[in-house]
Image 1 (spheres, rainbow, N blue to C red):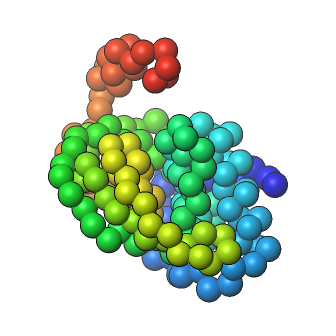
Image 2: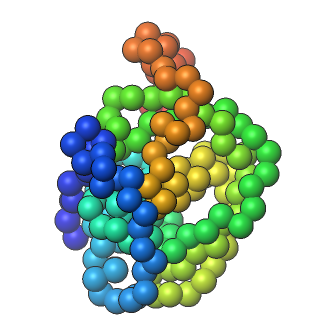
Image 3: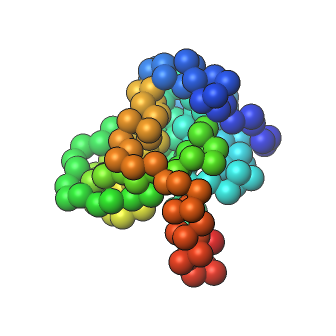
Length: 167
């Protein structure tokens, strides 16, 4: 397992806007990619990471909203319900945060690293993270959904209001 370099919009912006191809081979290479992505996500202290962010144009995502790594291969959002305002950032757009409007609930179908299909319901942060990462697979960055970019002062206020567990 290895930590991979995370591509950033300021350097590899054109690449990050490409559409990823479906995963067709559920092999050792995919397992290594998913393991590396999980290690990279933990190291970066992020919530989600798409394969395109580490330079691989495949439909694979890892998400961790605090209850362990969730691996999604060829994910598809089946349903979106409700609406929530969120504050989003992105490992590929370091230091920039914005307010977005996302569904408060999603139902996602994906495959695991062995090709088996599964579905899950995501609420709150998991709904936001699922939408954010699946957008990456279609070359869409969270900036598309931003209604307001946070100023440094607003970001500082937001961080000051968080409990120690949230920081």
